[in-house]
Image 1 (cartoon, chains in turn blue, brown, orange, cyan):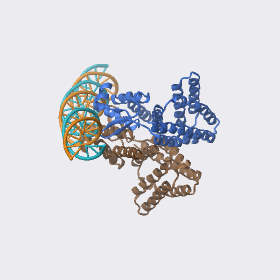
Image 2 (cartoon, chains in turn green, cyan, purple, orange; image 1 turned 60 degrees about the vertical axis):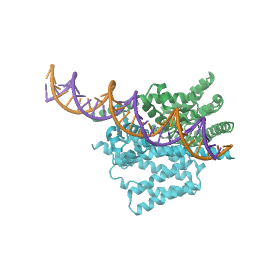
Image 3 (cartoon, rainbow over the protein chains, first blue to last red; image 1 turned 180 degrees about the horizontal axis):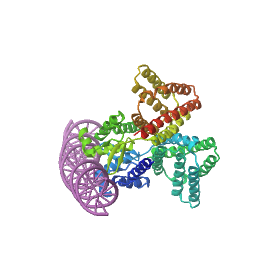
Image 4 (cartoon, rainbow over the protein chains, first blue to last red; image 1 turned 90 degrees about the vertical axis):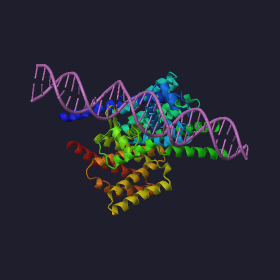
Amino acid sequence: MLEDVLTTLEKRRRQERTVLSTTADRAASVVREQVTEGALRSGTRLPEAALAQAIGVSRNTLREALSQLVAERILVREPHRGVVVATPDADDVTDVYRARLVIEVGAVLDGTMHDEERLAALDRAVAEGRDATEAQDWPAVASANQHFHRALVALAGSSRLDAEMELLLAEMRLFFNEMTGPESFHRPYLDQNATIAAHLRAGRRAEAAAVLRDYLTRARDQLRDALTRRASTR
Amino acid sequence: MLEDVLTTLEKRRRQERTVLSTTADRAASVVREQVTEGALRSGTRLPEAALAQAIGVSRNTLREALSQLVAERILVREPHRGVVVATPDADDVTDVYRARLVIEVGAVLDGTMHDEERLAALDRAVAEGRDATEAQDWPAVASANQHFHRALVALAGSSRLDAEMELLLAEMRLFFNEMTGPESFHRPYLDQNATIAAHLRAGRRAEAAAVLRDYLTRARDQLRDALTRRASTR
DNA sequence: AGAGTAGGGATTGTTCTACAATCCGGCAAT
DNA sequence: ATTGCCGGATTGTAGAACAATCCCTACTCT
């Protein structure tokens, strides 16, 4: 009995300590934020020396941070040329949405983990989106939308899926930074969020999945159009 | 016309160059192989100085390699204590299989990309497993089984999903290293592989998904038992 | 004897310096 | 105008150094 408690406590402590931020992690957070905020446009080269000095870390530490962001697909490393902010194209949109379709629809259809807490998270995201729309705070609407989809995947109850979804959502933010006028992008989908949440509350998983599928394919086409148009006009 | 060719060529060249192995990548491959081969048992601590000297790279480069493997969940970093080979427990099995259920079943159900080439890859993996069984080459059977599931996910046509599946399969190898007598684990599932492939050839996606679901839940329970038994007997 | 505590050795986290390999831009030559 | 070559700049990698942290041991105190 005591043994069990001790091992679980030790396990938790280890996880907590793993979360604790090392310098490289903090440097990674700084760069990541600058990219997702749109301060660093896609295609921008990130020279190691300058960036390291700007952030106030050594070049080695910065390289570890950059490697991490490369693993998150936010940056791309071209050997002997440096890392650049990823420049997503229409193919990337296609690929990301294929992954999202499989994961999100799959999480919705597999109902084994749909407990009250997870469903409440969906409702919260819907409410958050509604409030943000009323306040006409479009960045907040975008954020609420991401929360909704994060909550959808969380229905599956797998931390590994959650992590992968986090990566995909980070790439989505890159897409949005790439298109013109992303303010109006999210609003039309808020109603469908509510519909999906309602279906899931009632246990109608198939219907929820159908709405979601329709939702995702339309958003995909819209994004793909935006990115191909941008690619052709420059 | 020429412009198009040039840009596509440049894009391909960039991807190829990204694949090109740097020293850190090679060091990562070395460690990764030692872990998946089972030469480095789970829980083993990996001191940086000794490892760097053994592989013949500097400690800096080795750290980059280790960070990469931490991102792949093969190793775990405990700040100020070093990296250790991940020691999966029953919870990890549960989590991995939840992710696999969503991704693999999702890839099977979403038939939009099931073309001839991808179906042929399934058949090849089935044949590979049959041959290996006849030769009683159990490591080869395990390998064929992984190829089959990789091919299943490839049905979705998303390189990002493929990459995630690669991570999950690497974790599966950790599981196998952890259990006693993994030789007999894979053989019972080979028939189901054939059944799934046949269903998909005939376009019966729902039936294929049902078999796969049953398959995965049984394998999960078996693995979970094995890991909890091991945890209690030490 | 057992619990608490201080010290010391070892390992990690981080920085700095150095240099070879590679890439890019510009200049010269044809 | 194209090709070829050179020099500057940046990356990839190595190595040494040191503070921070951890773990283990020996010691002290009750």
